[in-house]
Length: 107
Image (cartoon, rainbow, N blue to C red; front, side, top):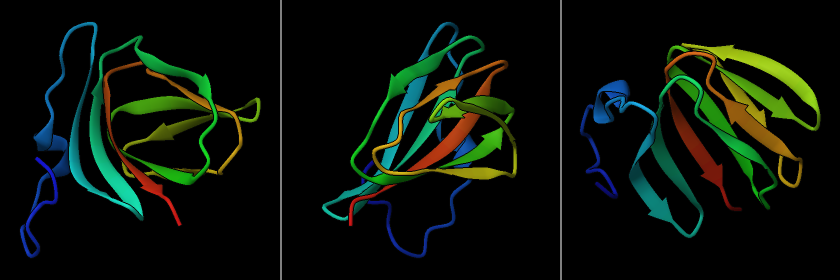
């Protein structure tokens, strides 16, 4: 699914299902100015530390995630979000299954 139709109501957490030992993603929109992608992470899965040239937000839809930004750890739970600043090293680790909306802003 790309570029979801305007005026369509979506249940974000319902757009991806958990899979054992995996990370599942679904892109909602991909533009030159940014992307929106929904992810489902199984317990123990994650993204290794990396940097990105753009700001990104992680909005947790279900469960919780451990986010590390420039060496500082944060626990982000359902209903919460965190901004990962451009060019700062960051990574994610799932202490339990969780779902998130990742929004990358490219401008």
